[in-house]
Amino acid sequence: MQKYNTHYHPPAPTLDVTIVNPERADRRIVKTALLDTAADITAIPASAVRPLRLEVARVIATHGINDGAAEHPAYIVTLQVADLTLERIAVIEWSEDEVLLGRDVLNEFEIHLDGKMHQFEIRDP
Image (tube, rainbow, N blue to C red; front, side, top):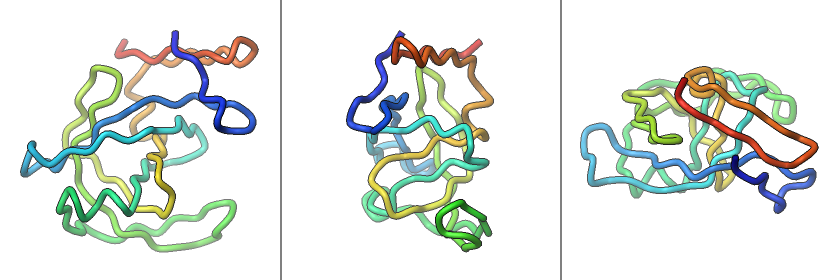
């Protein structure tokens, strides 16, 4: 079990993920990721795009609670999450510094959230 991140209010489940350029495995960045079961798609920080030298694959329209309808650049990346490597995942760019792991990624895992104890488990079933 991993502990919730208490820097969020209320505390939230986070873990480190590695974002990798699928064309150049030596271009990689480790970022904190927030498990976001309300998100359809995973979002990576805009600040990760340039160091990874990612190229826009397409533009994806989204509709969020705070920003309403918007269009976001989408990139193809490899994600390393909880000992599982997910190849060629389409992700969108956003302005915050953490990764939002959406259901497109979370649905690959078995996840147990224990809110009372502020801990969680994520594993490849």
